[in-house]
Length: 429
Image (cartoon, rainbow, N blue to C red):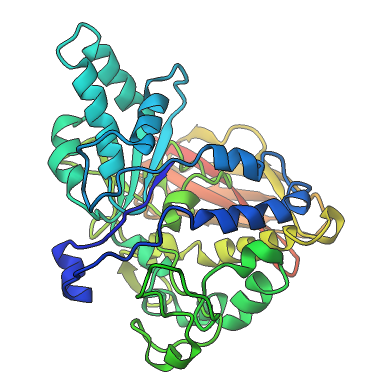
């Protein structure tokens, strides 16, 4: 479930954009042309994987939340009522509340629950149920309702807070992404492999110089080809990537085998977040979450996300084909799993063998690579890897201790390769 903000007027935004006297507001119908286009590609798309919902089902889930003004959380709305209903129902599966704007509709749902139950015999159980189910994934903090209401009144509610790593998928991608991978965001790739000739849904994907302009948003001038040489965030070409900065929140939910959903501190396609020492229910990025960037030879606060960029963009291009191609004509992800236990114990000085089983639904040749995610876990020593096909021998030094993460990365050989993983976690004693 996602919450979209109506306006951005925090001091930081004021410094960037200047004072605003009106709102950038595309209304409440902008998603309907997208859903119409999704309905058109659904017959093809649904051939390629199970679970794609129909356009009508998606329409049935849309609610309008608190949109009167930025940070408004005084009124119950269809959106806040829907979140409240889901938090209180009998399904105890986690609910990821994707914060792609402000948290005010979420805050209103929580306040409505508090107003109804606080001071009653049910309150303790209701509070525990909500904090057991709800997980906020926030890309920045775009109104004050989390800080002023949610955090002090629901201190046990989990939040994943991404303030640094998302930039490689946002407006400043040219600065964050290594230059050798810029092609994955430039018009030659985005236009030819994703946007054009891939059906009506992807044709509506906003890009630089594409001629599109969202109604109601006077600042959406990125589609004007006359402004490409002097765009707000740099110089761009036609069909270059604009920004998809909220996508790490969604990418975190995609199961590609990295087991990050239950362990955000382990890292995955949505980046890597570590538990705050001051606030144990908050996982965050920033200066304390650095991965070694081999492109710059430095520790980098953005590299926990950058390291997956190529696999993500190629996966996007492969899935774009699903919108227009039959199953036999498109690429699909390899299937990979651990042979034996993915979590195991070992002794210092020991040599252990890790192995995966991998196959490809399209019969493509597969390439398997093993690597150590050095920044994750507690293992600080060296370890030798000797790989042969789908098997790797790990030699542990005599003085080794801690938790070692070995990633098996399996990629198919296709025009747009798709990559899946197994994470081996070795507890070295």
